[in-house]
Length: 250
Ligand code: OGA
Ligand code: MN
Image (cartoon, rainbow, N blue to C red; front, side):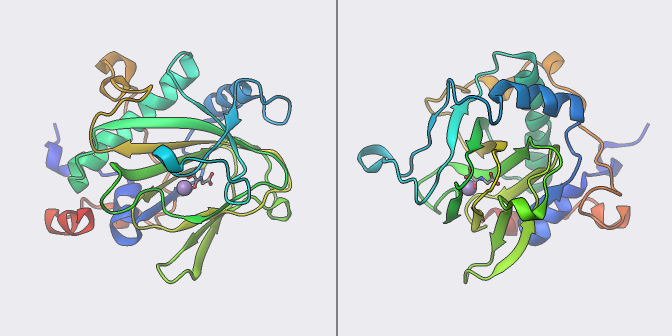
């Protein structure tokens, strides 16, 4: 039997370490994506969803020019949600083991952007006031075309655009919540996704406790399809050294 130290590490660990971003087309299988998509009935109904707000506490407000999506928090009440949260739990464990980020729990919401909506450039957490450390987004629409807009745009610290990601069903994106500026470009089509965050410690939220699912609820860690993923070759995916891991967690 192989020792734990020689087990292959998923590509996303390597990508997160070098760029703070990992893009994984086809990471979630079509049947599960379809079940999640059915839960928000993209384009047909906003029932059960509410307008997303920005800011916190007293400063919380609607700002549709900044962000125009409707959201609903996952509560683990359906099989599809539990399976997807189980996948995120697998990622949480991989990241903690390889990067020592100390991620403790997961929160996630469905997001639906009506035509015309987007989300202006932002980061998901500021350095000292928010326990979010790693962001994940799963896209739910099939057959997305560039001409339909709605791409995830990634920027550097100076606001220069680095990359655009097509919000195509099954693609999972991971990025560091504190350091990767990003935006949802205005969409011309109903755009469904799940946005999730891995947080440092328990707080009062609907998913408290779900991050510690029973082992039986957790699917085996998915094998990333290297050809379809964002790593060029398996050689790029070797276990990273602890020294590097510490550097990106600071
Ligand atoms: C967010 C976000 C990106 C996307 O919800 O904070 O940046 O592509 N989402 O949906
Ligand atoms: Mn964001």
